[in-house]
Amino acid sequence: MHGQVVGLGGQSGIYANLVADQYPHWELALRMMIPTAVVIGIEVLRRAGWTTQIPYVPVVAVNAAQPVREVDHFVLEALPQEWYNLMRWGIQGGEAGGLPHLKPAWALADLIRREGWCNCGLGPDDIYWYMVTEQDRQDWGAACSALHLGLAPMNPDGLHD
Image (cartoon, rainbow, N blue to C red):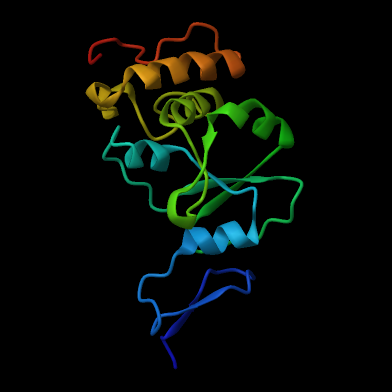
């Protein structure tokens, strides 16, 4: 059985049988372990087609009030309940048992607010602005309002809108 069972990592106590499923659904496993888990950051933008940047592992927000264990397949970022309160309108459900995730515009606003352009691993020229829809622009306005970003432009250089 060596090599046929792999763990979620750390002291999670969650394992997958690779004979039964060669590609385990780690998001479902993490969701069962940490119900407050939400995919954030660059991974959200990649999934939406806004960028081709691929994070080494996806960043997942978890409520800081819960015990957080390290895992191999995600970077867990403990965030306070206040973050969840601010982001509640920007979180959407996960598909097919996957983790909930931020709407792309909310993920971008959150990245910029917490880390700033370029410090977050992305610059304005890394975004495919033609993929941004009118709904995304409305979501940006809502995110900026909720996160107290004022009238911050979605694309600060405006060259690729």
